[in-house]
Image (tube, rainbow, N blue to C red; front, side, top):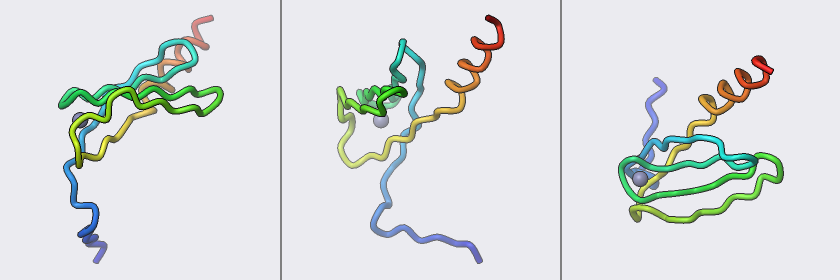
Length: 75
Ligand SMILES: [Zn+2]
């Protein structure tokens, strides 16, 4: 019933690893050279490396948020 057909965007997806460096969240792909930084204060996004062409890159914010919450709690 909920079958989705994404003909237009049938691209391979790479899940990125992310971590925090000061005001920046860094997303790096373990599968190619993709590298992106996101400033969580200003929402500025900088793509340092596009990585493999024709690939969707998915960043995971939740591990970073958990880490932040943990840091806040331990202070
Ligand atoms: Zn990639």
